[in-house]
Length: 101
Image 1 (cartoon, helix red, strand yellow):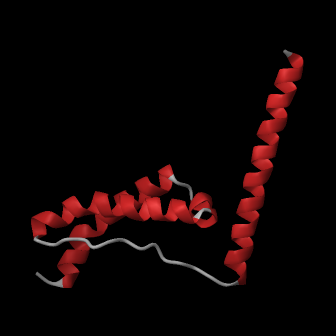
Image 2: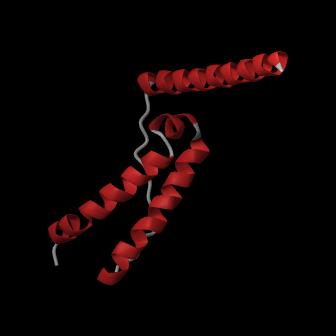
């Protein structure tokens, strides 16, 4: 078989595995938390390996593309700030509920 055949055969499997991983771990989580990226990469490897085995292939690992530069750094900072604000909001809600009780 050719690499084009392989690409055509695995395209759906890769797309489905990636969509499932992003549904479980949002893009903001992946960008903001390096450990989330590792979890997603390991999960994709485990999901894709069964699709390769019938072809006699094995998968050493999956690496998500790493984007850099000032725009990505700012985006990561903003996601971190949003996460912090969400945690503060949740803590304030719990305190208000405690005061009402």
